[in-house]
Length: 226
Image (cartoon, rainbow, N blue to C red; front, top):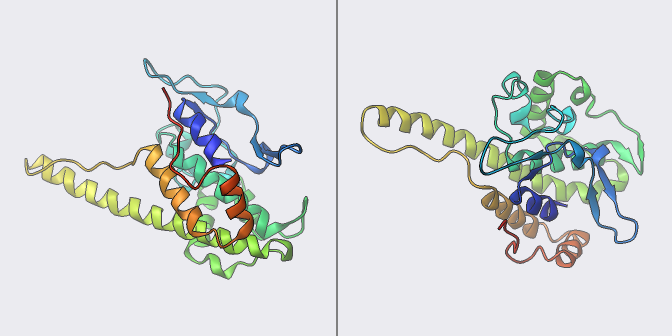
């Protein structure tokens, strides 16, 4: 799913709502399908982004950065990493609560509150100690893999906090005529490569290793917008 999603992002198509309801499996190929593109946004190079229906996403699967009033007021730009984070939250949601297609536990009930602030606080608390949560029996092996993705997610989030601090310091130096600014956000390709590197580290989980090999995810991303 992420390779195809990344290629479309590079081409200017921003989905904006990876969620459990929008994910399907093609029964013929076994490949994942991201549904509901009719509400996606088309990024253009010669003017402002054109939008479909206005929305912010499905709260339980939204990136932490988007769980704020500023994001609701469209003051936070949509980024590739926000969608990528959404895919990871889908894994957490399923592995901690579902047996097959049936929800058997309410472990993450706070995420469903409809309150952005409460969901943000709950996710930050979750990220501080994900090892205290336990997957349902049928997903225990997959949960070990997901823990690796959560470690990566928290490492990246902490790094952004450090960059923001450095940016504020650089802004003060600039104001005093003593230096240049700091680039806050890496380009989508860099984020995608980091994500692939993390997946490669998790290839001790055999189904993931087979999937990455089948989708050609063990080499450099060959897709770029032209």
